[in-house]
Length: 420
Image (cartoon, rainbow, N blue to C red):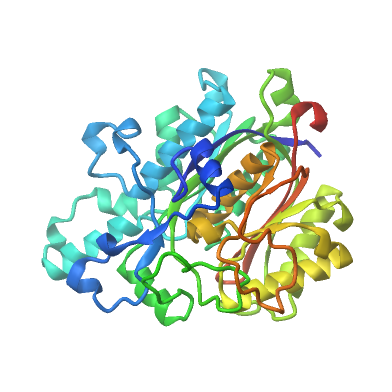
C-alpha cells in the first residue's frame, strides 16, 4: 500500500490563526473559549442558555478573499481559504500545469453555510424579504462550496469533494484524501475540515438535546473527563493538511510532518446521539485503523481523543481505549484539546490532528485543561492541566459524530529521516 505523507498544515481556530500560534497557545494551556454574545442576535437569542463558544478572533479576511467577495463568502469558506493558504505554502507547492490537474480537494463540514443560513432565515421570515435573497445564498449553503472555492483559488482540477459527515467530517476527509493518493486518482490532496456553525439554530436545538453545556462561564465551560462535565462547547475554525505519497514527497525534498499509516471509517448503527456504553463500536473503529496501519496496540505512543466533554461520550471513549489497548492504555497519554478550543463539529478532527502533529514535532503532548475534578470512571492519563514534554511517534486520533459515524487515524509523527 502506498505510504501517505503530510507535507503541509494550516489552521484557523480559537487558539490562533496559524499553526505556530495555535500550538503555542495550546502548549501553554490557554483557552480560546469566550463569550459569544455577539453571535446570539440580541433579543432573538435571549433564551439561549449556552452563551460561550470557541470563536475565531483577529482573522483578516481581506488577506484571503478579494474585496468584491468580502460580503458574499460564508465564514466557513474564509476559514478554509486561510488554512489552505498556510498549508500549501508550508508544503511549498505550486500548482502549475499537470500538478493542478492531479490535485484533489476533500473538505468536511457538518453544517454547510450555517452563518449564511441564519442571515437568510432572518431576511425571509423577519424582514419578509425572501424574494430579495441574493443568489449566492443557495451556493453558500451547499456542502461542496468550501472545497469548490479552495479549488478555484488554487487552480486545482482533480477530484473535488465536500464531505458532510457530522463531527467526524474533518478526519473522514483526511481518510478519503489518503485513499485518493493510494488509488492513484490524485498525486496531491488538500484535505481537512471547516466550520462556522455558532448560531441560534444549532445552539437552541443542540441545547435542548442536552448536548451543549448550558453556561455563560467560559473559564471551565469545556472540561473533558471531569466528574462535572456538562456537555460540549460549540466552536468554529478550519484545519487543512496537504497529502502526497511519501515517495513523491521525499523525491522533491519536502519536509514531512508525519506519515498516515492507516485509518478507518465506520458507523455504530446503534443510536443517532448515544454511543454504545460498552465502547464496542468505537473500539472497532480504532482496531480497524490500527490493523490497516499494521500497528500493534502496545505501539501506540499517544492519543488525540475526541473527548467532547459530554458525560456519555468521554466515558465511552475511555472504555473503548481500554478495550483496544488493554493494560497499555494506562501508560498512554491521552490529550483532549477541545478543552481549549471547543468542538468545531465538521472541522474538529482536522483541527485536532494538526494540533497534535505540530505539538509532537515540538516534543510536546497537549494538555487537557480544566481537569481538576477527574471522573473516577475516567481513569487514564489525560495529560491533566499542563502540557508534557515527551517524544512520541505513533498517534491514534479519534473522531466520533452524531449518527454513529466514526473516523480514526493512525499517524507516525517524526522527521523524514525517521520515517524513511
